[in-house]
Each structure stands twice: as structure tokens, then as C-alpha cells.
Length: 34
Image (cartoon, rainbow, N blue to C red):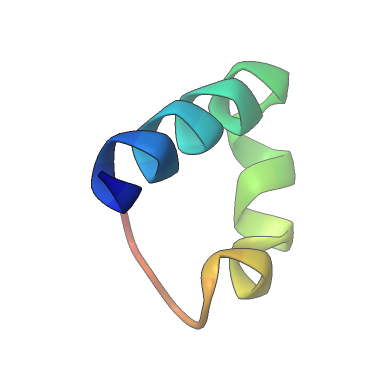
């Protein structure tokens, strides 16, 4: 299930910092607000 794996990675990055996530939103594949 790629969806579950994606959520896990997203949660790990979210723990590092929301600001950091916004700066690297391109890493998730484009502009994704949440």
C-alpha cells in the first residue's frame, strides 16, 4: 500500500518541522497543502 508508506514518510518529515516541510513541499510532488 503506497498510501500507507507515504503517510509514514510524511509523518516522519512532519516531526522535523512544519516549516521545513513547506520549504521542501516540492519533494512530495508539487504544491500539496496538507
